[in-house]
Image 1: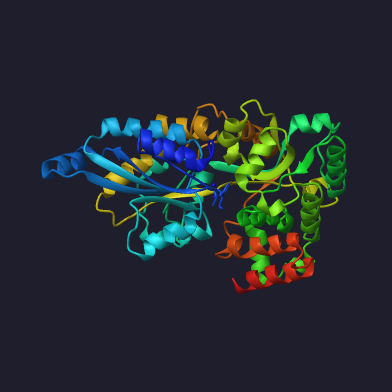
Image 2: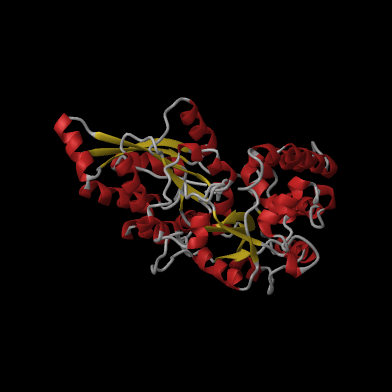
Length: 444
């Protein structure tokens, strides 16, 4: 895939008050998800099906359900959701490992050690397919699958068409901008080309505003940023990836690829003095409080922005990538997906818990209000997120494409993100970075 205040502080507070937590995003997010914040292990007393509860109380032991969650958004609402589940299911304890940072590494470590969670989430696409051998098959559970939008459900199918995971929320990413900063700088129209973007940076600088607070400390952010410049809109994400893998499309010949380095140059020239020290939380804080005009991120960070400044006037700017407004991209996908361990000792409870957090009224409250995102499940609930609602305009106008990084070769963000950091520090040239990207994709 895929942060309510400082994630560590929140997790600590929640662990103390309720012993419950939730986290998220390369992630798509990480946004992000997904890999976004600090890592916390928290446990929350929860409750199971009546059968599981009876079994637990009759033996004098609690029924324990192990949950691995890689989100750091809507933490308070998630806690409320779990508390409500607890009240209906006495005798069960849900242990949540809150792993919003390095979630992929931590999950793989647990799987390698044989400690596979009963319920866990992972980015859809390439990452999720690695775990489908452990996944419960939902294909015949039509009472559950019928609750989801079909396009969202498609992200959880394996190569044989079986539904091995259930979708979380739709996520959109591009340039986030502070409207008040743009107004102060006299920018009346959103830039749609690289030339217009550079001109906007100059106006912001003249107004005393930091144009970019690119979270360049985060390799996953840089990796996601790069996909805008790979995209062939006529092929969309899947077609672009297939063309790269087949050799039909090379990085050297991508029409907009070199503009990625121009974007990074703008982030260096019109950004903080030490851009590689800017993490996701710092960038979002700067954006929300008008200390910076633009960052690259997705609408999964809505709750974090709100926590920094609930009155922040933030909108989406489809990422300029070339000389034509037609190439501007906002990327949209159901990025995170949840898996139930088919070999769970408490399989029915695990299925019930996952169905609950994704489809119940409390689950939709968490996603629509806490996270501020559009759920993958069918819902009539109003989405509170300003960014998610802003994205609807671009989706309706056909100005979106799918996500490349989730269907890229395994390890894309961790491998290729550092190449872009090396460019920003002057340790690699654009030509060297381009060659490294090509070698990585060719090997994958």
